[in-house]
Amino acid sequence: MVDMSVQIGRVSLANPVMPGSGTFGEGLDDVMDLNRLGAIVAKTITPEPREGSPLPRVVEYKDAFLGAIGIPNKGPEHFVREIASFYRQFSPPFVASISAPTVEAFGKIAADVSKPGIDILEINISCPNLEKDGKAFAMDPDATEKAIRRITECTDLPVWAKLSPNAGDAPTVAQAAEAGGAEALTVANAMVGMAIDAEAMRPRLGNITGGMTGPATKPVILFMAYQVARSVSIPVIGCGGISTAEDAIEYMLAGASAIQAGTVNFIHPAAMLDIIDGMEAYCRRKGIERVSDLTGALDDDEGMKLEQLAKSA
Image (cartoon, rainbow, N blue to C red; front, top):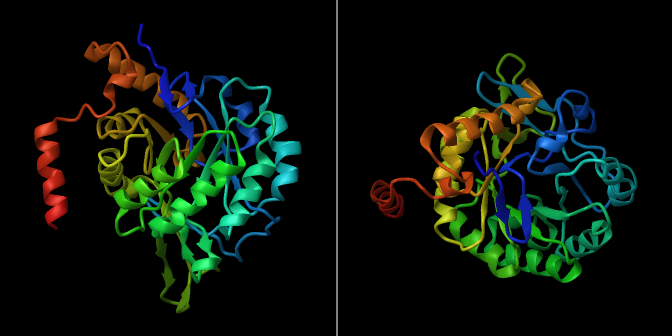
């Protein structure tokens, strides 16, 4: 019998598998047993209701998805009253994902959603910071630390900071989030990209740029998770291109304590259950008693060589 439980800060999860924010909805309880998940992560909400980005919002590739959805949502009050209430019937911890344009707005929305039925706050710091001329919080260690610190002052819930792969120095931003009081780091959000329709000579997204997710992003974000895990003392949650149990295991070997599966949920809604079963089967085959023993179990000698190469690049 494999012990599939993992500890993320103050929170115990039955297993390390959860959905990525924005890739999961209430209707999925019709096609899978949500009680089997390690945690349930909701779509990001903002201080005020939003309509989202102009159409078109999605470009599909063979191994990637480019989206500019724009965080459409009905605001914190609706989220607490309707969304959080719905998920109370399920046993996994419920994670609210929040985004805001200023440090104070982050603090306010954190307080607004710290209600019964919500167990964890995941902070989407890839959003533009209006106090820094629109530069995303996750691109700036100082802004990251201030935002996370303000949030932790406004809530007693565990805080997870979701980093951006677009940051030039992810370990430094990760350390800033830890200094601000984050109990875990989700690595990472989408990679910024764009697409052009050559015949029409126009952008293929209404927002011009969007976030790229899917299997094509895995090598980049896997390495980011590897770097970040070695720069902080808090748990890392790997998120980027995870479609199979093998993908999830790679992230844990690189240093992640848990994982989020995202884009694959649009293709195979019950993929996370396959990932859980596959991870358990892998541990049995390898004689590993606890899935948590996979975290950071990558060959250190080769790992150090890779780390040194990255620093010298």
